[in-house]
Every structure is written in structure tokens, then in C-alpha cells.
Image 1 (cartoon, rainbow, N blue to C red):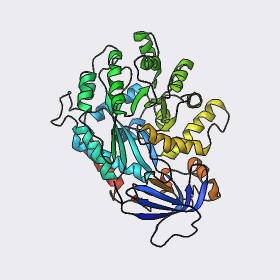
Image 2 (cartoon, one colour):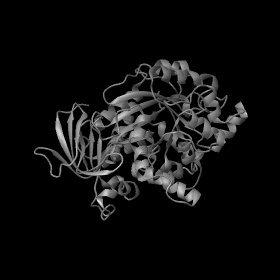
Image 3 (cartoon, rainbow, N blue to C red):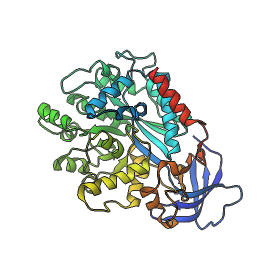
Image 4 (spheres, helix red, strand yellow):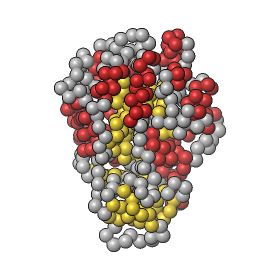
Length: 447
């Protein structure tokens, strides 16, 4: 993604610590070349972004095909495990073409919500029954192409998913997820290559899905490439109980024993942890990706995000199952969940929550030069209206608080990626009818 030199004028800009009025950004080759403050009127020829402009948002945990489950899984009652059966039935219907069409629409929805980078936790690798496609990475390539066409960056977190539980082979539904063993997973994943808009990372689906003796293979693959490594961690108490029965320790302890934890690793959910788990995760610098709207939708529970951060675990945010696609809602939900749990307020400032949604989220996905508005950073921006029915009223200097605690994805007016206007005045410039694209892709998947 590159752009010709140009200037953007920001009516108000969040510069990491405060809101600055009248900021001009000079951009070249998809990066911010200069940040000029004290510019009260737009320079001639500048693109104008009215409202509050933030760094682009990072959605650190996505399963694109779960978007097809929205609303359908709200019929009746159940648990995570009953929801999973509906998810498997949807996964069975994916083909590379169908997945491309759906993901393109989902990533366009993300762009409309101000998301400029997505971490796609990808485990649907093969055809139903487990037969590889002619291109063994056809499904992953479909996702990479979908992100490019929707105008956003992607880190494809290619997931090892090898078993249905401790000592159990994959189920019929899970055969298309599995490469057989971690060495075969590594060989296939090694065929995927970084590109301008994409990074290739790794994932351990979970401790139940990768045999303990093969965890180090995945960790070593990521270490050799200095790539991000993500893992679903302690999302369900049933997984914790099964891990203790099989290995005599918690999932976090098992991951630590096999070299999975560390500064390039992110645990997703990190919900049901012991005090020792929290210390292991934080002390190793392992990140934590909280997905509050999915965790509440699936009745997972509320993770100890405050304790994890206090121990040294950087926080990021994800929309996971896409019950909603709204990083502002994810950010405020993390704080509001903690208020409900503790009956006290103010666990994070708005600035800290925006950091999780921007710079720390990007770092968790391997984009260390993204998520800030400063010279040299990638030119990715999100502009939030300050005059909607949700955001009107507060002083502009309270823009961070307005964005986190009042705004929704519907208030995003502009999204800029690599200096290119991907969303302009609330309309996607590359996918003109995003609702229609979503509806058609989901209809095709159900046909």
C-alpha cells in the first residue's frame, strides 16, 4: 500500500496524551513524514478530516467466518459448547471463493468501524474431510486477498489445530483444520509470505488442540521468523480441568513449560487464570487480547485484565466472533466489565484504553511502526465525528473520553490506510455496498 505525497488536515487529533486542535500531516509513501501542530485552517489542497482523528484501530483477534453466525446463534439458550456446534456447521460450508467474498465484506465492515489492521486467527485450512486444496494455502490466500481488496492491513495468524482434545484425534468437523502434526503445519505455513499489506504469524489454537510435545514446534517456527504467536488461553473452565487431568498443570503452565510464552506471544481471552498463571503471563511479557463483546456473548466470564497488566502483560482488543464489530465498544466494555466485577470505577483512563486499541494492538500483530500519529509511523488514521447524537456536547479536549465512552463504530467518518482514503464521509471507497456484500456472502454460504 503506497500513496502519493499529500497533506491531511485534522480538525482535532489524538496525539497519545492529549487532543491537539489544527494538525497538518504531511504524508509520503504511505507514512507520516511530518506532524505540524498549530495549523488553525486547512492548507491549500489538503484533505480535511473534521472530528477527532485517532491512529488507526487494531482488531487483534478475528475469525472472519463467524460473522455469518450473527443473530442466528441468539435463538434459544446454551453454552459455548453448543454455540461451537453451530460454528462448525458454518465452517463446513466454506470454500476459498465463499471465504474470500465473506471476508472481503467483513473486513470492509471493519474499515467502516475505523479498523485499519486485523489479526485473523485462521484455522480452516483444507477442504471438508481434510483433503488439501491444490494450493495448500488457498483459504489463507483468500483472506489475504480479501483484506487487500477491503483496503486494510492483515496479520494472518495461521493456526495449528491438530486434535479435538487431550489425546483425542480431530472430529469429523475438525479434519479440515488439521495438518496431521506440527511439522506438517510448519511446512504449509512456511509457504505463506509477507507482503505490503500483510504479515504472516502463527497460532496455537489452544492447548487442547495441539499436543503438548508439539507446542515447541509452533513456538520455534514463530521465534525463527520473529513473527507474532497467538493462542486461545483459558477461555473455558472445562479446558482448564481437562488440562490438569492430562498434564497436572494449568494451560498457562503447560505453555510456559514448552516455550510458548514470551514477548511476541499473545494469549487471547486469558479468562480463568490462577494467581500463578497471571504471574507467568505478565512476567514473561506475554500479551493479553481481551474480546469483551464475544466473552459476554458466549457467557465465558470476565478475565483479570487489570491484574495481568499490572504484572506486565500488554493489553490489546479483538472482536473475535463479530457479535458486533466496534473497537470502541470493546474498549469501554473492558472497563465497564471491571466496574461490574469490582463495584469501583476508573480502572483505565480513556488514553490507556485507546492505547490497547491502537499502538499495543498493532504491536501484538507485528506492526511495531503503526498505531501512533507521529513522523515515521505508517499513515493509518480513524476519524470520529464529534457532532453525532452520541458525541455532541463534550468539549473537544475530552475527545478521548468521548470516543471511548460515547462513540460507536457508526460515528466513524473517515478511515485512512497508508495515506489512502478507504472510508470517506462514512462510505467505503473500495466496496461500495458493504451491507449488500455481507448479505450476499452470507446467503451464498447458506445456499
